[in-house]
Image (cartoon, rainbow, N blue to C red):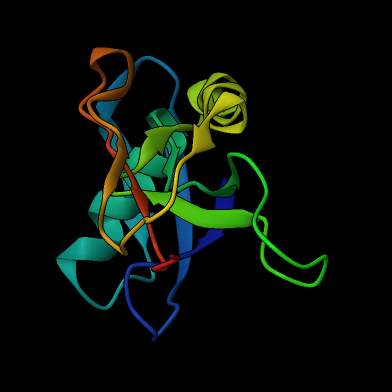
Length: 124
């Protein structure tokens, strides 16, 4: 049996998952107060995903030493957990030219995974 805390909503239900290694149908989830908790537990056990946050470097000189030199970004949809290191590698290689607006797509459809990386703050 595995214990999880559901992160779908602020309630944070304590979930207990009893799993059969051979079948999703034989997985039992208890402790959830709504159907979303069961869906979350099944996905977390079989194929965990995360929204990824990072920063991208700003290209060139940005002004004084105290000015911001990085733009915060995040994925618009969750990324499979095992792919996060490769995604971060690609994000950290990017050099952005100003201006950047919150919501601008920095990487579209990353490696065909249907994951966009977007800026979360406006600069320039």
